[in-house]
Image 1 (tube, protein in one colour):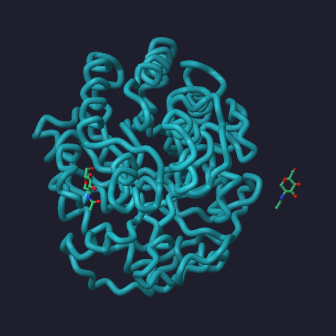
Image 2: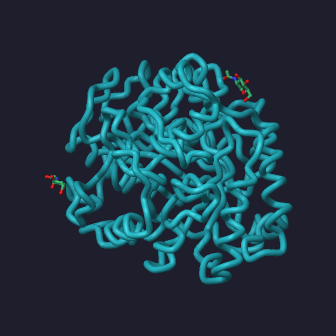
Length: 398
Ligand SMILES: *[C@@H]1O[C@H](CO)[C@@H](O)[C@H](O)[C@H]1NC(C)=O
Ligand SMILES: *[C@@H]1O[C@H](CO)[C@@H](O)[C@H](O)[C@H]1NC(C)=O
């Protein structure tokens, strides 16, 4: 990460918020049965996150995928109330695929700002306009039938719209980002998005990097390679790791095996070695919410503060430190992209996979089950996909 001062000097950021290495999880708007999460559900998550035994820091931040409460048109998501009650920092999200309007997202957010003022806005650490939209329109995303995405022009337009509408409010100094898979960022066609944001959100899942030697012992190296590739193209913009994790259960993916033991190894080699207290990090995940994803990423059962494995960070690591720094090698891998599950996902809640979704529209529907991105892309309309996103978390398959 680069010093915040550089950003300030550049006039990009008014606050020093990005200098803080937030620790948090992802949280969609619905639960594993696709029903809406309400204030008490979010509160339970936030309390568990803050109370996790042997955590290497306080997990008191959350990444949301939408501002809209599920089952409503444009009411603010009740996660905001839960965050205010538990002093949880909020990375806001707006769903931008499959829609030509983010008006409802903005309307829900404005209601929260008007109603709560500083009590709310002081907790907001960032705004992400979009989630893996570029991945879904990339060659890999299309090949994997990851669902409806959006190109760089659409994202830049929505970023401008949000900025205009919230300038002069309590959110005007909140840094704006976009979240996508690492190979979307290294694709030069998307550079306008890098130019438009204050920080770059990266989703990385070595687990899903089939064809690249994705066994658990190589996960740290695959992570570093992708991270460094992004670093090589973003200039001074800080990188936030917005989704990463390894499933504790589920089917194998090429050489990657889901197990509690491997989830712990990944926590140590990627979380402890590379991310925690070094890079703003939103782990995937505290709780699963996508019933259609066979891979389960939750680090705890039923929101217990005693996780599936000991979260204590070791002092020695296996991953070799010498990793190529340049971007391209990693990028090339494109074949598999990294997408994470999250990406396309939707989100919901907990998701499963990764992603979470968002979506706008989402509220209502919770459509379907899907699981793989592929299925969705084929069978659902864009609107449905957006909604799903909110709800379920679709995974992008590669
Ligand atoms: C690069 O990005 C553009 C625009 O998002 C996309 O159309 C193209 O497919 C991407 N290239 C690859 C190799 O995925
Ligand atoms: C989680 O809670 C459900 C419902 O209360 C219960 O049936 C299940 O056994 C619990 N699972 C674990 C692992 O504690």
